[in-house]
Image (cartoon, rainbow, N blue to C red; front, side, top):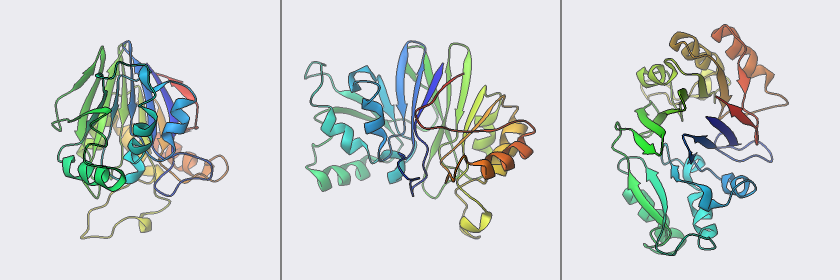
Length: 254
């Protein structure tokens, strides 16, 4: 299984980088997980959209889904038969938001003409050939799901956006690679009780990886100054092994 980082930025992007977008290849399939601003420009430099089996969205914050609009403009110029639409899997309860977005940029049918839209049920695995994605609920400001991704006998845990929670522990459990958000420089940047938290510090990502027995930890969705040493060092200390910072356009064999 291979992971390619198309975008690693949080909602406020790092200069010259895309927001969340991760291309996962395995089991004979290719799936784009999250599609934030700037991701499509990175995607089309590598693959024609026809080469995707699906797009899967973790949650409906703009930095994880807004380039669906861009993909819609790319997709009419495609090689697939006109009656074959791109499969796009959205989180539960997102239909109204997608409809509002469609109307805002075109019409109610804006996405339906090119995409085969559906929602996952929040628990059951999604299958794309021999590539499996199981949604696992995380703790964020809005409903959000990470994914346990399995193919070729390997396991990738993708946290999407989350604070420490049971779902994070489940995603880290036995992962060959934990792709974890690490948005916060300090807890002062997150919501304050009684409001629920929604993000992780690098140290919290390291704790989750260590406690779950993850073999490798790859940090993403974080502000990067220089080489991101501040985040890598904090995560590595908590993990008890060397953590890595996700690098745009780099592929990772799992």
